[in-house]
Amino acid sequence: MSSLLLILAFFNLIDSAKGRTECFLVTGRLRCPTEQRKAIGVKIDLLDDDPLPLESDDLMGRTWSIYNGTFAGIVYVSLSYNITGCGSDFGPFNTPDAYIRIEHSCPHRQHGESRVIELDVLPIYLPRVANLGSIYLDRYLDDIP
Image (cartoon, rainbow, N blue to C red; front, side, top):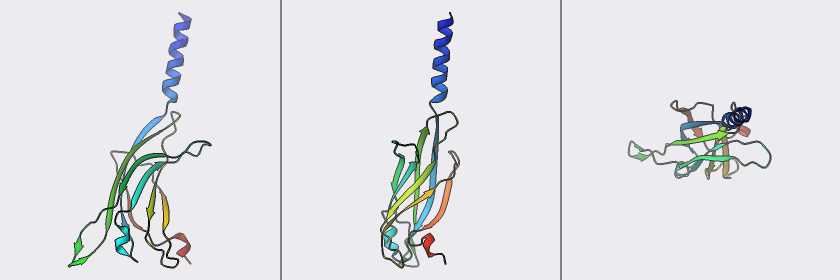
């Protein structure tokens, strides 16, 4: 009888340690004022940050920005995106640490280089939506005087 209780306790411990799964829906709008067309077809990845050694970040979702309309007969590129994904981390109190990675070719207004932007996503889980608003691809923190 005691070995049966020990086995049940062991399985309960394993079940509680497997981690929590959370899902995200992230929306936003990409803008590239210096070259508006460079905001079309931009790859956006939703990742789970895993800082432990020998562990890579988990891909939770991927999308590409799309064309979003015209204004007064002039092509107005205002790219919106929706990206969804789920992630899980080991441990009962450890939730996924989501961030998005945007790989783009929108030139920096001073350097003309393409870059990768990474932005943290607040822990807002489905059914709520994390709206990041407008993301200007050609502006960076080093622009602030």
